[in-house]
Image (cartoon, rainbow, N blue to C red; front, side):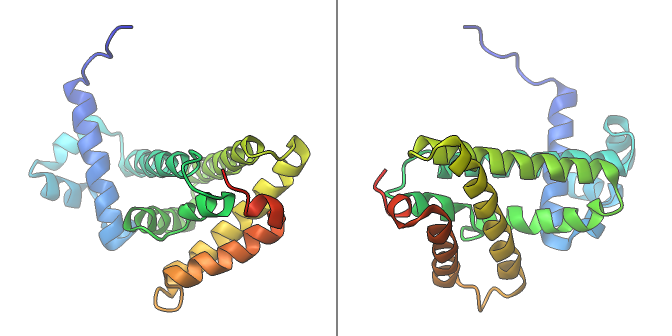
Length: 200
């Protein structure tokens, strides 16, 4: 197996811009992602940014993809069967850790923009489909048949998104114990107590 070639200077600069945009998003929402703000944060001119991205829309789309990839890595780690029970593994997808909270907050910003941006809307659909599919694969891995896993994965994703959005808006009320309790209730109902509590 050959090692992957090192990233080019162009790839490195694009990654820097996207990473900077993702951080600006967390700090100030979509409005904070401007070419001027990114250039100021990176200590370069706005022409450097314009050289690597056609426009702000491209920066936003690539930042959305970056957030989805980052969240996907956390999702796959949570569903790696390293948790003692199915519900315990699934609840790690909630905005409990700071990293997960940042991803959920970033998604919320992008979802509002996606209502009027077809490219972002398409990216949202892809991310949602990937989450449902990955949960479905996980449920099959712990003993559910295909038909059960398909319906359960969708129901669990619905509960996950609903609870997570509420938690973003009311962090005091939706502290970690409440997040886990309500998600466990919804997930145990969907999976059935046998599978929900099964040691894995």
